[in-house]
Image 1 (cartoon, rainbow, N blue to C red):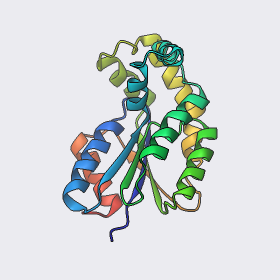
Image 2 (cartoon, helix red, strand yellow; image 1 turned 120 degrees about the vertical axis):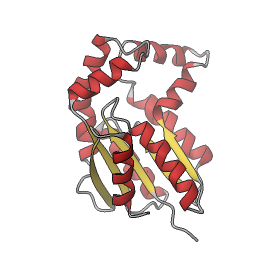
Image 3 (spheres, helix red, strand yellow; image 1 turned 30 degrees about the vertical axis):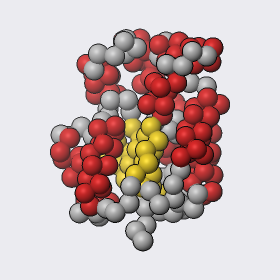
Length: 197
């Protein structure tokens, strides 16, 4: 039986990690017998915003202001998805979390609980300026100049320490990927580093 892989995709907004996750999923679908389970926080929140509860609508307003979602809600969404749908035989791709050091501790405990070993962290490295330009060019309603500046600031303050938590931690393999290059070059680099060609 094939050993499933676990990968955390990390990087600034606009770094291309969502695109690379899709490319890797497609690649693995052709080169692996195991299926995949993707846990993408952004997708979870977008679906959550379509609900009609007070919490979902208030959460939607938080995103519209470019602010970081509360810790309890972020953990609730991705933890619920895993509790309900996790399959140990599947590859696990994580995108959009952890974004705070507290989440890193919870993610670590989750991966330990599920017995996931040799977890790969792919850190997509782009400059703050590149991140800003890409967010502004994608045309989302909440990507205002002010919101973009806020996201760049909290990435440095909150997300960077959360990702660095895994860099030298036992059981994790950490790769920094230059994400200023073309989509094709980045994808090839990932395949090479994962040694799954």
